[in-house]
Image 1 (cartoon, helix red, strand yellow):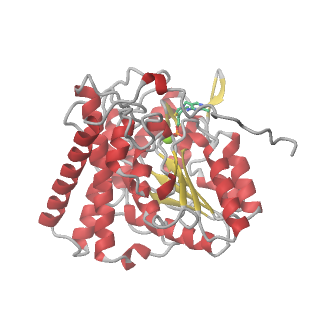
Image 2 (cartoon, helix red, strand yellow):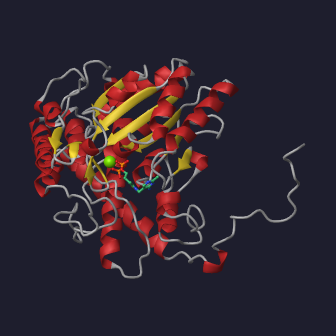
Image 3 (tube, helix red, strand yellow):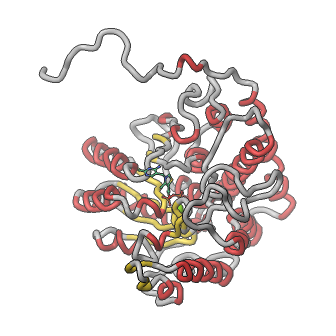
Amino acid sequence: MPNSRDDSTPEVEALDRVDTPEGAGPTRRGFLRIAGLAGVAASLAPQIARANGRIGYHAADLSDERLTDLYRMILRIRWHERTMADKMLSDPDYRGYNHFYAGQEAVATGVCAALRNDGPFDQIDVVYSTHRPSGHALAKGVDMRAMCAENDFRATGLNNGYGAEMHLSDPSVGFIGADGMVGPGPVLAQGSAFSFRARGSDQVSVVFGGDGTYATPHFHSTLNNAKLLDLPFIYVLENNLYHQYAHYSYSSPHYDIADAARAYGIPAEVVDGQDVMQVYNAAYEAVERARAGEGPTFIEAKTYRYYNHWGAPGAEVGQLGAFGYDPLAISSFRPEREVRNWMQRDPVDICRATLVDWGVLNAEQAAQIEEDIRAEVDEAFAWAMEQPLCNPEDGVKNVFATGEVPARQFG
Ligand SMILES: Cc1ncc(C[n+]2csc(CCOP(=O)(O)OP(=O)(O)O)c2C)c(N)n1
Ligand SMILES: [Mg+2]
């Protein structure tokens, strides 16, 4: 997978638009060609991706404990996703749903590892998430038990069962929240960055967004403003190739969406989103830049989701990922071989191989850590399932203000 915007690759050529009788746009054949080439690019990439030559290899300076924490976090997200998918498929009483993040774990883990996640609210860094929030939430430090309970609408959940997956929020750890709307997230995140600047704080505001956010007006106005004001802002674009069921070439003329950020004068890096070290390296430099008052950074992580857009169609209990035709797909579907090809460059495997190669862990220790994390995830789900359900009649609570509200508009 090319890391440089200057690379002239077959993949870039594959994105060339083909004129059709309906007008300019990629043909179905073109779509399959792109998808196939993306798979080829993934399989040609080295098993342990090297750092981008333009950024430092900061992950090498992390302590063994912190490196092991990266591995733990990737596994925590992975087994949360797998367990939840299995529950959706097998437990008729389970009400939770998710846009699964499996396959993308190294992105959230690498970014959040470079942030300040502990301390008072007016000193920690903040993260604005998307409709695919569970990995971002865990990586930022949200309690897994509370999140599991929330996702099943339990009264003792993270947000008292009112929010569930697309409205998860925990400001105490700087996880401002999930966002079911595709687009506005960056505008809000930029607002936080503006307030940090106004207060003279060295906090950093991060927004995660998918490739689908490119075509929204918010993407462009945010990047323009963030650069004009040189805000402490980081846009992490997780390019998992698809928005819902359409390949991103249907809505973006760029092979690297990072090129669009460069046009706004923002330093932008394209990283291998399957390699947590590479994501961390880019995030580290972005955070340094923001804290030094040198403005925003754009990071595009090339990655892939193993499940379908939403829920668990096409998945089977005990099996990672979803294959075959997605009955929810309305426009196109992804080739099964593309899914399998990306799974060969799995973020768990890449992180484990790196840590074993660096002598941080041996294979037995790595296996034991995975076993411990699986027990932690099972325990979190078991706890959540014992929590009281919230009352339907409480549904409108916290929607309207109660008591007397003084008019403030004119004074
Ligand atoms: C304003 C708005 N339009 C449409 C949708 C429906 N929708 C939900 S997710 C999604 C695609 C998002 O794709 P991307 O940004 O690439 O994120 P990914 O799902 O790949 O993580 C769409 C169109 C929405 N949630 N909000
Ligand atoms: Mg996407």
